[in-house]
Image (cartoon, rainbow, N blue to C red; front, side, top):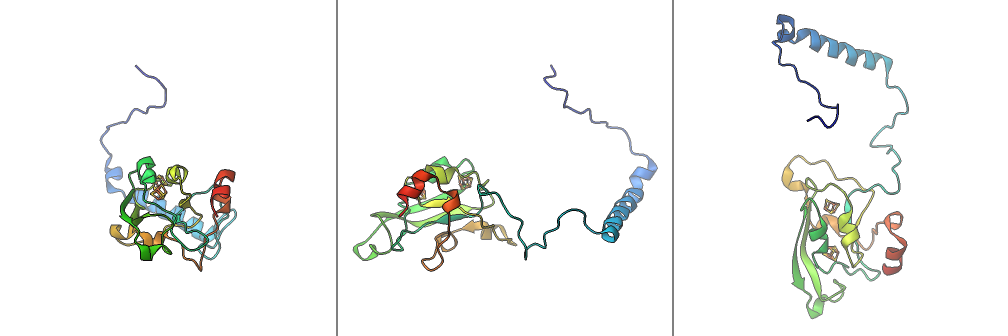
Amino acid sequence: MKLTNRSKVVSNKEMTFMEKLYLPEIFKGMAITLRHAIEGPKGKVFAYPEVVKPRAKVWRGLHVLKIDEEGRERCTACGLCAVACPAEAITMTAAERTKDEKELYREEKYASVYEINMLRCIFCGLCEEACPKSAIYLTDRLVDVETNRGSFIYGKDKLVEKINARIDISDRQSELQKKSVK
Ligand code: SF4
Ligand code: SF4
């Protein structure tokens, strides 16, 4: 039974000799490219990457693992973000803080390894919503272009913000989160 009229009947007819040559279609495509090259672009043009198109405040990009005002990592490796992630993009290893590490980690437990596979991530923001420690946020940064799949697995070296280069996530924070982040 047909539920909608959106399905298309795909024809399986034999290609003609001209269609099998492909050349007419290739020339048609090249003519369109040439026309655009001569006429130039239409509409508003952004000279990316020098000029970046403004994004909506709610736009979600590359994650950041926040530190607190004393530079200690907020993440306690509770795993709630990984459980909430529909793409199973987050993995971590929990460790216990030693006496000498009190200045590095906010609580007794921390993530010794925290990785996000950017090829799996769909930037839904559920990890941000699930985090009880206001430790993970999606920012307006972009994931870099890479030439191999392994480089898309971002570890703490790329995710944890630096004390001298804090990342402003105020537009992404709810009022409740703003109160909890100090
Ligand atoms: S943004 Fe969504 S898909 Fe990406 S790591 Fe977070 S929960 Fe997973
Ligand atoms: S980022 Fe948040 S939810 Fe994820 S493990 Fe760390 S504290 Fe838990």
